Length: 112
Image (cartoon, rainbow, N blue to C red; front, side, top):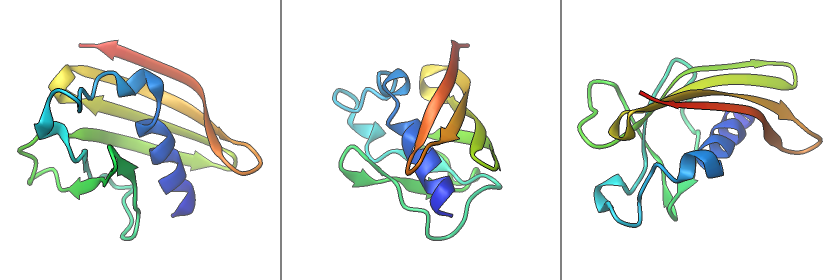
């Protein structure tokens, strides 16, 4: 669970994704909501905008939300895909575990 938590935190803290949240001007985007994927485990805790991230089911989604349909970990490497429908963006990231932290090695983002 700690690896998943660290990987997801690195994703939501990414400068490349940050600019799409618009949390400073669109108050309905705080707190960040994330759809629980098959990777979800009870106890994962993330922080964004100074508040805990809310995990919601795909049936509960009514507010702006981030979707992470794929999160795969193989040894010291991780691959994940994401979508942020309010901004019409999607992408994928490759991460690597360095001595203590997960870091983004490649990041692709497209506006749909």
